[in-house]
Image (cartoon, rainbow, N blue to C red; front, side, top):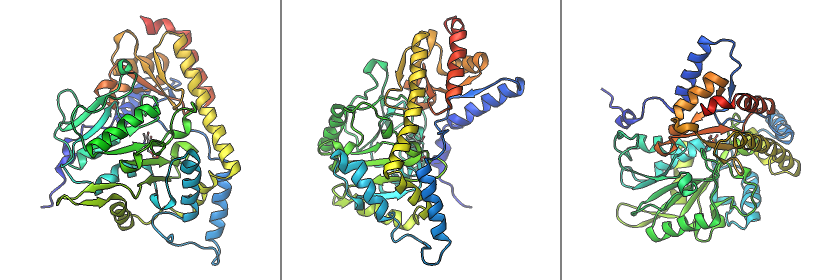
Length: 416
Ligand SMILES: Cc1ncc(COP(=O)(O)O)c(C=O)c1O
């Protein structure tokens, strides 16, 4: 009989969002008229920039003519005209040294952050994640056989958890011992916190001293408004020796339904083979990528390219500003009615301390039942997220204002 990958059986039943869906569906069945506002899942709501859709229309026309038709791309790595613009505008313009041949265009950062484990040894690395954390990093390590079972506390044995809470200003401590792999995500999902250059430098130095690899997820970099905050880990000296960076067009340009992202693997990165020799990680990833992936569609890459045009940049910026104004409304209103509010200044997520010591799920039920507002319980992102709650700024202005008006009108119910 076929043997399965039993690591899957270690996974905690149900991912966070299905449980939210279940509770909302149960509530709706009982209260079909309730005007529910969803502020939970981090999906964008605004349409693509006109510069992007126009470029995609032109690309469709290219596909309709023999002379301009495109089959498989010239490389699985992505068209050079896209990678060159990424290198120039996302990195070199910020004095981060990344070259076009170090970029691999893909169909999403979720897949990239998961697939990167393919080129790393199974069960042989000590792995650190922040707590709370984007759940994909943890679950994919469980699937890959890099953890033991889940403990009573809801943590997987074998993983090193770096708690980020209000007490440490949402800045993760360095791992106490030696770890081999560290996942960092800034601006952070779920806390909305950002990493200063000093924080990143601390991690880069740790990684250099301990021969560790940093996986840096910058899916939300476009939301940084504070000019002092780095957008890329390669703005930090030494990062090219120790870090892989993940970027996505999903939140930057509303591509969650289009699918385009990229991964940067500097040619200066190495890992250790079983015989102790040093191996170039770029070469390994290139081998993996070209074997298991056939490239992102031409139409999509043309759309992504348009994000770097003059008008594309302006249009995309307008949409981000719109979401950040939503975040500002959330922060302002929640602070006024007495919440401790974090994040939301350089990220599209607001991280709220639940009132009266309520658990994350108790607060979820209160918001849903009393205010018909759906958010995300912080405990779903890790044990240290207990007692916190995430609200997303990805929504229409009308929904954000209505949700905040409901809370303001009945703020006493939150204090009871
Ligand atoms: C931190 C983080 N990384 C990656 C992703 C996934 O991005 P993509 O749509 O490119 O797969 C998300 C999506 O919510 C995210 O929050």
